[in-house]
Amino acid sequence: MLLIHGNSSCKEIFDYQMARPFIDRYRMIAVDLPGHGGSDPDFEPHFDPQTSYTMKGYAGVMAEVLAALEIDQVAVLGWSLGGHIALEMVPLYPGLRGLMITGTPPLSHDPAEAAVAFLPSPHMALTGKEVLEDREIEAYATANCGEDPPPFMVDAVKRTDGRARAIMIADARSGGASDQKAIAAGMKVPFAIVNGAEEPFVSNAYLQGLGFTHLWGGGPHFIEKAGHAPFWERPPEFNVLLSRFLAEVWRS
Image (cartoon, rainbow, N blue to C red):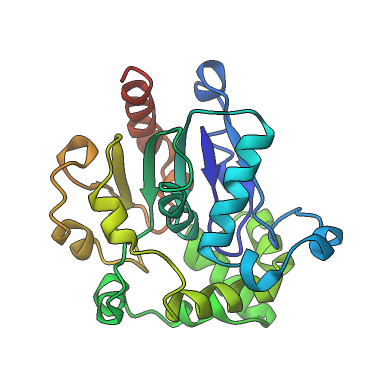
């Protein structure tokens, strides 16, 4: 299973999934996106930030990672930006066996859709801001992970290449991403949406209104007392769903 983190985060956000019982049954892979976490800044001469720091660019990187690891079948868990990247992978990676997204609203190219898919929040402005002040770093980490964010998350926001935020948001607003709503609607493998019931950024009403009849479990799942990162904030409840999902993916 490939786990893809969100904007200004890092692979450690999946510590509760990179553990038992999952590691006893599955090959769990979590990586830092370019410009994030412990990714090597010296690699920059080998890529173009203007294309790599986009949803499609990140999806291409993830496909390259799987190819380098000689993995021809995989399930993917994508969080927030990671969910958008995972949706972009669908047409790129024929070995996709199942997809779970969390904190990710599948959007079409209709600009008005974003206005209803995302909730008004002062922290949303930080998602595309290149340079964050110290107070903004703390606020962004808290908004993403709930009260008392882990120190590694604060460090991850601070370490992230600010261009990764600015370029990604600018590209998405200019129509650089695919019609991810259409991709989601046409999924032919198990597809799950799991959100926190107290999600601060994404409208759960929007997700319910998508009307997808093919969703795993019959519709979106909402975890009580969880916000934008239910897998981190409420890991026991989230992991029960993830375990059931993976069992079904690898039975099919």
